[in-house]
Image 1 (cartoon, rainbow, N blue to C red):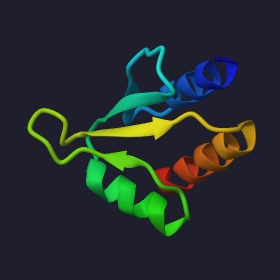
Image 2: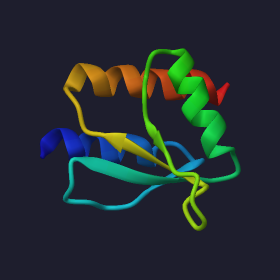
Image 3: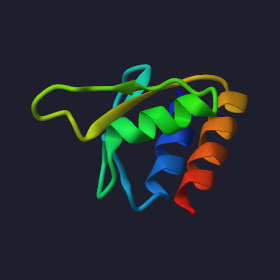
Length: 84
């Protein structure tokens, strides 16, 4: 639960991500002013797999699974690299 909260808080730091509160083992996140599918591809190129939804109403969303603290660190570092 603590890692989920940590990831949620970290995602809030990105202006282009809008995570939804959750009690699940993942965080659904709206991608704002960027292409969600391209985000998935960019992270995949870094060895990080996330879920992209190619469905009406969700095409601008991705889902991050909750992992270990090391995995969260790696995800956040990769997202920061994509900001530049």
